[in-house]
Length: 355
Image (cartoon, rainbow, N blue to C red; front, side, top):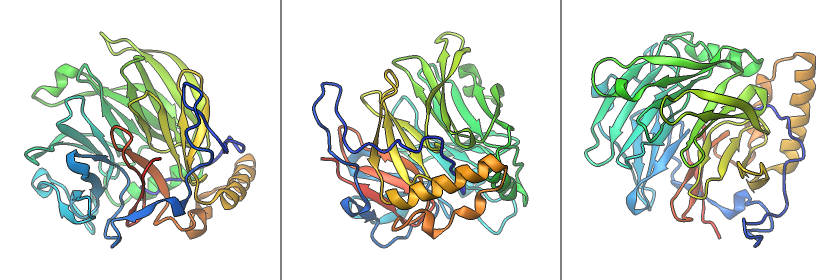
């Protein structure tokens, strides 16, 4: 999905950062030159999101196959048989576009969101079995499964499957609409039968990334066109949400990911950057920033247009992402301080080996 970013935080770039214990982690954000295109042959299609598998392999979304596996040397192969699960490619009018990809708590299964036709797929990374487990009436942007077994997912806008789905997404990304939402599938509904999803949050301006913080019993939701990440307390027994608040105002957030330390990583397309936020203190630092000067100008122009109620979609082009292989929309984290992969709407990831 073509993701659009507006900015509320113009001065969020931090030149230096510190760990919890005060030790310096790095004195400047990573730049494009600090990374490498992965795979080098730039053979991906719409590499929006993914996860890191054992042995340093990377599993990423793909328009042609649903998911593909990248070996450490960049060799690519199709994962599983998405076609058998009903996956369709262009030029079918109800084609499927894999968007969010996330681990389940068992560490064996991943969930895949389809943003154009509203399907949710479940894949076993050991057997590569792919199952379509839920059909939503509108596109599903991103999703996460919590330790209770419940699945939470975001709907960016009311884009029904078919020829008008993509156009509706573009409209919601051009000027803020408020038909985004968060849904929950209860644990019992995930065990056989036809799952039912309950709308638990509504009236959102392009609901996007979503993350479940099991240690804090919180749900985080990126509201892209409202320039903020929301936080909700979650009742561990019932799944009921309470204490809705803005965790942080940030250059409009796209995909979000929690790391092993409990920090929240936020990808921002219009800022062309990746930020890291401490959910307890809301302290934020910049991890990756390939085009700081150009991005600040773009953000300023977008803010000017937003104040006047003008559209912003035409601002997004090659100039918005500089040397990046495509518009930056996500981040894929390796465990134990391994490589970070910057994902987006291009034909390659940017691999960064952390210091």
